[in-house]
Image 1: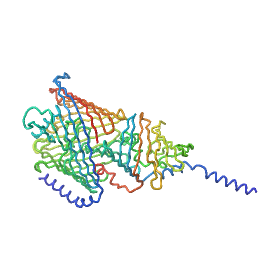
Image 2: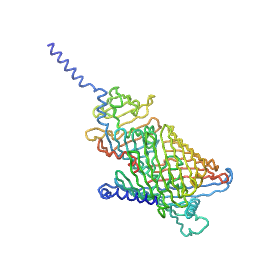
Image 3: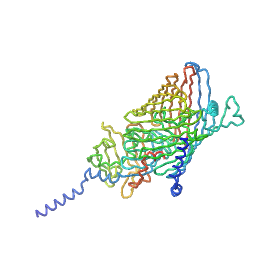
Image 4: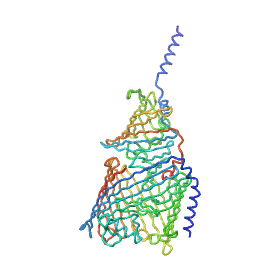
Length: 245
Length: 384
């Protein structure tokens, strides 16, 4: 009888452990499996709202890891403007003047073409587990979906933000909401996921709204289409000769 | 003779390297794009013989339709940028004066002028209205992995500095608009990529004869985080600033928090003394504010640079993206030797999707004994 009771207790304990939330690190690794990439190619559309005014910009972008990225804008106002990012160097090509300008690395944190989305946000693989240590803050329901709330602290200067708080969909392991903070503790940005797409066997955020807390009355809706993850990207694309092609 | 050999070598290299390109292109997906803009720019000019006591004025306007045609395949591109303008009043006078200078071989107006029922060959006052058509760019480009060739009218920009760039030898500026526009050069350009950021570039821009053309070879790339370039240049054009001269130059640029660039060009005319031109500049950004300053030494006088004829010149500029949809800019230049100066203020705002409004004012004096001029205007541009 005593042996039977112990067995029942052990079985109950095992069931409870199984039902328990995974560790923060395990969650982060699952998120990375969805959203980190060796390479990405997509067509993007940014709707930038300032006050009551909205402007849109469209682009074709491709990137390899965190170091190489290439963007070409396709909307009439900016058609043919290209960006090449190699490490922390960024060049912009203006087709009308056939002019190439190199801009400083710190501008990678600035909004791309006046939007709330930075070059780092738009072009770099996030690789959360590599760049951040994580802790579970709790569980919440967001837009009817169960979420783990994770707090991430940067563990390398390569990380785009000092601290991030992310609401992670407990079923699909993608961020549904995120707050990004500076070292000073000031909130820099807030983002909400508006659409999620299945790319191959993984979930990927295909439309999000980003609000910069450093600007007044602005928001940017960033939508991605024709997403190709880890597909072969010609490395020659990430060269100065491709920039001016 | 050396120039002719260089041009011939470039043409041969181009033919050899691009053989077989056509068949590859046929299999590749092509894209075609047609876009452009319409700009309307009214302006007023005031003149003061002394100080700021303005006693005469003139007015003008320019309405310009620009068209860009771009056909692309992965290994080939054809591009044309065409412009048609209706010029009234002072704008017609500017084009008229530029055309007059062009016939004297001093300045290339780069366009076709038409004034119905007006004899353009007659000397005298300019017609009140002119139609001007210009070909800004018209070129084909062929790319292979290790070489690219551009043939036709194209902008060849070697500039590093914000305003003055002695090694930017092909640049001629069209100053008739609100901001300077680079004129295209009719040239054959061969470029050999060297790694991700380097290139060896050869340009031939023959004129009426091979001897009267312009030819250059330039090596550029990044070395230990420093953007560097070296240039050799031959200018055989009669009557040009660098007429009948050989030049050698170098340029570097680095980002040390403060952006720094420096250029130097030494020229040896076929007859006469050698001269040196150099520029040193810096730029810095604080949030949405960008500051730039530059010093320019012109050892060749007006013959080397008609726009900055004095030996010592300085430039400073400030641009400020104060609002998300608006920006402001201010700049000033001083020619210390001939006591010339100019200053400019401008503001632009995104009025709607694909529509820009800009206003500007320029105050300048070309020399101590010359009148002061003030030009103020506005432009509305719609892009399609």
